[in-house]
Length: 90
Image (cartoon, rainbow, N blue to C red; front, top):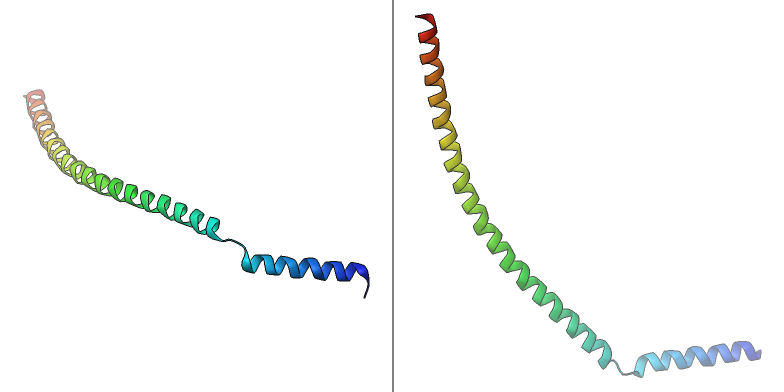
């Protein structure tokens, strides 16, 4: 074997052993932090969704009231047009 292949095998074996036995607590801590951030984001989104649902209900009620008012105004305008047409013909 050449020296280059021997050195490459030693480096590869050392890297493999290092990955097996290295301290992984930093990785675990990072994962805990990411999970904590995700959980807080999910709880924030949950409260935002409930608030939006409540506002949507209020908007639907307001829309119904506006539609009723528009219908009443439409009827009044029709009556006024009818009265004006009758006065114009007389």
